[in-house]
Image (cartoon, rainbow, N blue to C red; front, side, top):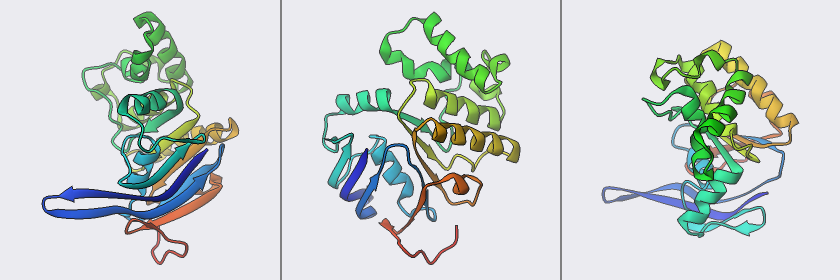
Length: 227
């Protein structure tokens, strides 16, 4: 499903170029749960954003479902994100001033559904996470754990084949972390392809099919650091 060949990514900071990824090659099969581990700045989140079609490669190729998408136009990449990929961001990225259900329903906007249809679909997911009573609360009125669950519901609203989660446990308490782990396990049994970045040890590690370690923009087969 996912294939990366000799992928590099450079960012410019002032007059300095930073190699966020350096010649990374990787295959991820449909239905795998893969952990990306490594210290801050190791390149794991950059690679997650490339897989999610949020960031373009500087060099190399990215294949998704046997299609080379690494140099596709922006509007095609936007369609892929809408149809195939659900994101759970580290900082949740909920929109203040919008209610919980409106945040969940944001990915439905390009589909042209009515407000009533969007709300109905969002409420079904919020009920799954026991948040139906918070549907009309503004994002900023929710606890950190509730915001995380809203972010997860948003990631699932389009029933994506691929779920990408960037440090999902770093900003929530133990109770909501355990809830998230149960949800991940459900995704896995449904055959979703799941990629999670983390620098923490957790019970998700036990669910993973494999763990890939990163350091200084490269995959480390034998990491000499602890995560």
